Image 1 (cartoon, rainbow, N blue to C red):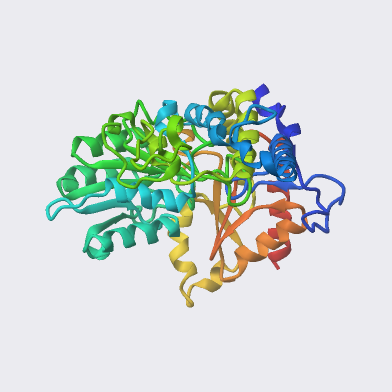
Image 2 (image 1 turned 135 degrees about the vertical axis):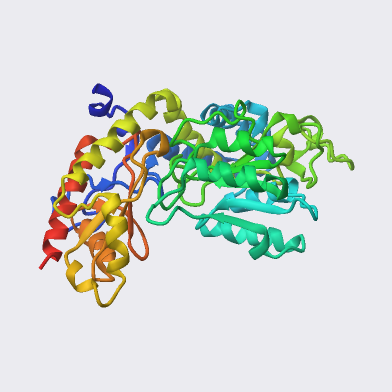
Amino acid sequence: MQSLLDAPFRRHFVIPSNSDVGASLVKSEEPCTYLCGNSLGLLPKSAEALVQEEFRHVLTAIFHVLRAVQGHHDHPHGREWMNITNHVNPLLAELLGAREAEVACMGTLTANLHLMMNTFYKPTPERYKLLCEAKAFPSDQYAFASQVQLHGFNPEDSIIEMFPRQGEFYLREEDILEVIEEQGSSIALVIFSGVQYYTGQWFPMQSITKAAKAQGCICGWDLAHAIGNVPLSLHDWDVDWAVWCSYKYLNSGPGGIAGLFVHEKWNHEKPRYAGWWGHDPATRFLMPPTFSPIQGAQGLQMSNPSILAVASLLGSLQVFKEAGMMERLRVRSVELTAHLERLLGRSAYFVPPDEAAIRLPLCTSSVEAGQYHRPAFTVITPSAAGSRGSQLSLLFFSSDAELMMKVHDGLRKYGVITDDRRPNVIRLAPMALYNTVQDCESAAKYLDEVLKALDK
């Protein structure tokens, strides 16, 4: 499998060394094993270069005070600040399976989520409920509850949270569709994560969207863990709206600029919340008293974006473009993730998910925990490639309540950088753009070393 062995785009990223991450048990000068791109993507060298280029341009503009504001209209590299997102939106649209006018690079994830819910969540006494997965990312949960309360409803009665079946770790498609069919007439908004941050499950977006629309529901998606991770076709799937951040799989850096999608069928709706940057660019700087919105998603823009944040995202998206976008990257992602899963499955401490589901309740019992004193782990991410992206979530269990953090800290000493989710999950994400087979093998090898040291 040449796609698995080949990592031609790794050279485009800044890989921290073992010494950079404080690893003490491996050679300090070698690159670390970074498997945390689902939380914060590595720095693309092109993003660093573009940010430095824009920063120099900003300084030049400031030193030439009379020209400073002209940076909005005059740029030595053709990226006028007024139009800089025009370089980003087409690339985002390609990743999303959207039309350019349906995409806006703007804001932050939760601010955009509130904007979309303010726009599309219009509950009535008969249709007011919101359907989502249980234990969505906390920021989403907070937003859902606050939006429901703002409309005078009780979240306990109005938010339908779907849990996996007893003894299972992720949701079944048929269970989601059944709830939509049975309660659709009372559901105003169906809103799931494209890829669930905790389990790594890629929800069946097309079928959920179709079922929701058949029941007259609005359907939106949080794509924070999906964009740049799995192939998407938002326009063809008839998704109403979506939001995302860019610092995970899109590698734009901490707090990177976010974005939103609005299907073009909503173009006839004038934005309920107007801002200067959503005004027609042809007359924006003439400051007319009446708002004239840009047609499509970009009419929802509020303020001018951070130029440095956009430049960083653009640098990363240029790497995606060179890599062939998701069509090529998805092949490598599937193979890398499957390879890591096979390696983990060979561990003496691995417990198959079905068996783990039986053993786990016993591990929480003070009476029974003693017989499960050995450290163990299972994978709670779906095994089917079509139901996951570039993430495997490892659930650890034993009588030691601190096992997961001990494993996390132990892996770091070997230069393996993972993401911990208390109390007992570690997430590993082999990224198609920059991770290698060796990264997967190092992670599995050192995980065993750490568990052996703890198994005493």
